[in-house]
Amino acid sequence: MFILLLGIAIVAFIAFLQLRIKYPNGSSYCYTVHDFFTAMSWVFGFITLGLIITICWLSTIVATESTIDSKIAMYQEENTNIEQDIDEIIDEYLKHEQDTFEGLKTEKSSITLVTLFPELKSDTLVKQQLEIYVDNTTKIISLKEEKIDISKIKWILYFGK
Image 1 (cartoon, helix red, strand yellow):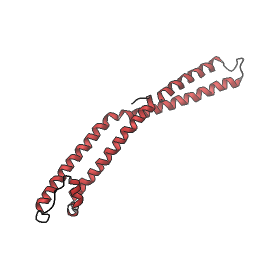
Image 2 (spheres, helix red, strand yellow):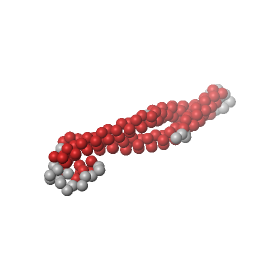
Image 3 (cartoon, helix red, strand yellow):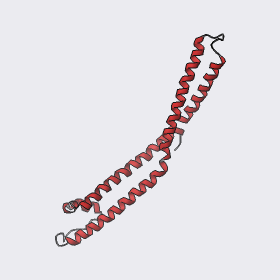
């Protein structure tokens, strides 16, 4: 869309420049016609410049699309590693406290187990890993939102997907 507008602005800019040259000050037309063509040349010149700057700025955002999937995969892999580490810590904790939690049904999710046992939450390693896990999840969500926004920007730029 912006590329289409840029084309229209460039054509209008060139047309007004040619009309300005064709009808100079000393011609049969009055000065207001020449001034009008001059003003319109400046207006469409600034519009063209603004569109070029906008297209360059939006193009840099679209260019980052190829890296978003790899960033999401990296954060998901890191979350998987954190889940495995927490699983190991919980297993060790349950082995250590087996006599206290003798009748406990084992949960499949380590995140659920961490929320069930306040003693395990107080462990600094688990606390740090949970903070990283939550941060990573937030980053994954923001990257997915950014990917959706990029598809809107592509449409604004060139009616693309």
